[in-house]
Length: 331
Image (cartoon, rainbow, N blue to C red; front, side, top):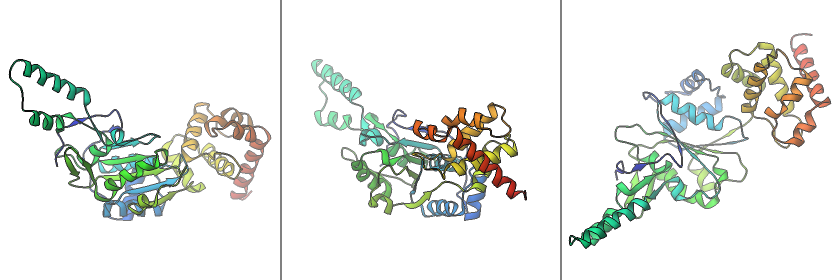
């Protein structure tokens, strides 16, 4: 069923326009190279999973700690393929109306009043025809999921990002099953809308709760963990090419050491990049306890964690970082 006459609303989701389309990668190496060209530094297992998801036209489910690049992979895929990015941000209480479609009740009521006015003039419309008209495409407000499986004529399938699924209520997952398995949505008043070609679907979860196995079975799964030091340094230098070599190395080593401390919330790569950007604004060329103490709020988001690291612990970590870097340089 073609629903391209319906209203497209961006109020419930985010749409990102991109340039001309590009073919999907031809190999794992091609996938990794094209992601890297857009400054996304993938590990080999992630590049493999992305490649297979694209070739097999299967949804990609990314789970892991916040700030590890799960959302960014969908943005990068949209840019890499030259396709529109549609982002559905999940939240508590998200339902069919917010995620897929709803009827424009205000317009429907206006249509009814116009029909009643016509009736008073002696030209009453056919009631059955009016009923059919009220639930036609022109009164349909399209949300992210419907927009993704039924794009405009001539438009390639978009990249659909279902972000932070763990924030939505569990019943919402049951509705997603039809979309993930058959790339279709059933609208009782209109019928079933099925994608002519499946969109690229990326789901993310920060694992604040477990996602049902029925959802995971319909996807290719990948756990996105914290990067090792070499990869994190490469990411920082890719995203912030003007950062000094010494500062970048010390920042990455410090964050890597910080993740070994027992904290409520460990910093992700997003926090590493943001902290580096801030230190560059402060014209830092190396880490020192005072500057670290004043900027810990960019790395850590809980006061108890900040209090635990500030002062002597920060100084200890800096000393540990420098000692290890000196040993790595042969003294």
